Image (spheres, rainbow, N blue to C red):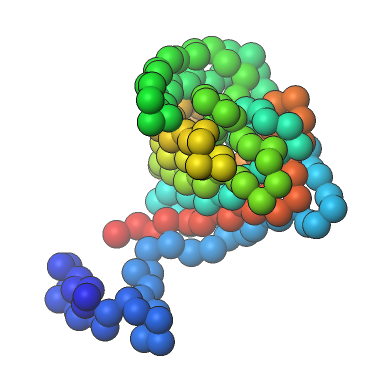
Length: 195
């Protein structure tokens, strides 16, 4: 299957192995954080984030030392009423939704089974952080996460949230509620360029 750019009518070869890689040129790697073999980490921090992008994106493969909720905080702000969260989830047999306003962090993944602690199994997570440098409004996020545990316990979750602050974001902290990030957790921060 060939890829065609609607904007500038460029045609790319198909995406099969061996062909030239397709780079949409919209994302740029800023930094990565990884928990090495035999290690744990209470937090992964991205600091001195450049202000040259339209939006940010976190791409995560996450495990915990005990199944727990994963959180994100901006600019080292842990104020008890500074974040609002909305969640929807499903696991193949049931669905759920809730909200938690005036909280001390943003939820990344928490419903169902939380971030897994099972060896070799993790949650796949993508979080978009929109208009992170706009000082005229609160910061808004949207997150999609999912996991499959041994073909029996699966969960997918959509989360939206807001940081009730107009400051530009220049630091992001990712942590687990009452345990730690387990080995092989990998978190990558990308900048999304303007159109």
